[in-house]
Image (cartoon, rainbow, N blue to C red; front, side, top):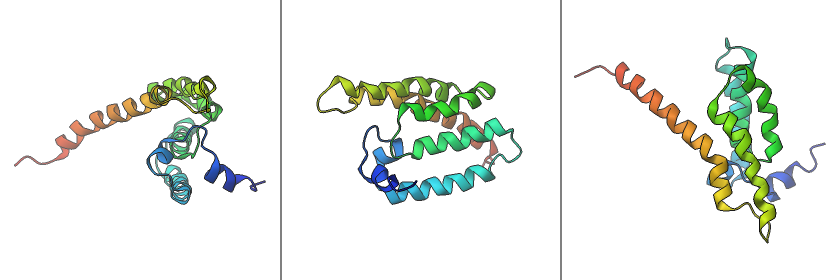
Length: 142
């Protein structure tokens, strides 16, 4: 069952995930995914299952060596319960990966990669901006 997994992780470059785009080291990605599974199971333990599932699935999508558009499908039922604008938009923009049919040799164009990952980048910036005022408020004033 897992016989083709090493080939998939080491040789497949259809639509590299964000981690592989930054660090192309399959052992690092595998270790990060295992760590994320443990972390995701420990955080938000009292949150409803759909909220916890979104954290787990979203993290694994970001850490995945390749992101085929249908990988995002299993996130959709949970987003119906706990909507997240960046992740909802990403489930649509990830389909831009199929623009690889538009060029020879087959490769996902840079503009499509940018459109595909933009919702996650903007969502991350939005989250950071929301966290910064809370951090500043927690710091004691001089």
